[in-house]
Image (tube, rainbow, N blue to C red):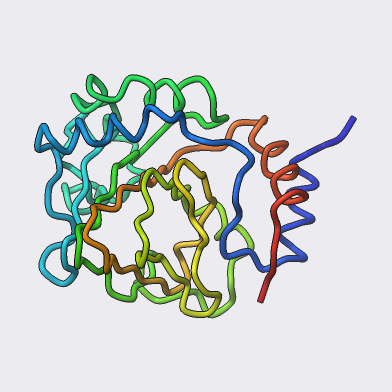
Length: 225
């Protein structure tokens, strides 16, 4: 019997992964559902004035509040790992039943923390940044950084990119699910006339996730630096 978590450890030791396409997709209804969430005006400005046109709303988050899109520190907790945080599903779920079902039943994740829709508006941009606690990539790259988050594409207009500065553009297509190393410097822009909708998921990885990781790596891995 294959021990998939041992195989995961072997892969991340020998490959410097920046992103990895998983062999699973969002349901097609997710496109209409995110538009409904947008039309209901759930999105709030994310990370202030430094970035342009970057908005977010929580499907699952702190206190079940859709507008608490930032990390726990912004709401007087030590971090997102603070045991005093009450994580819960938000009112956004009523407008996205098929998307929520995907996260509850289809993808092997558990104990969700922040699960957010991310909107980049036409003409918007996200400046270069790292999501480490210090805001600077680790001097010695962490093998587990590929597990930083899932970045899931709902819509991907032309001339709209998310790019690792040292590894290039992530080749998103609608409904695709990617593991994404957000510890390394990355930036994004939307030079189209359409909204770009993604989902960022932070959660624990279930045992079955290791099998998904390994089989996706064997099928989809392209390059490493």
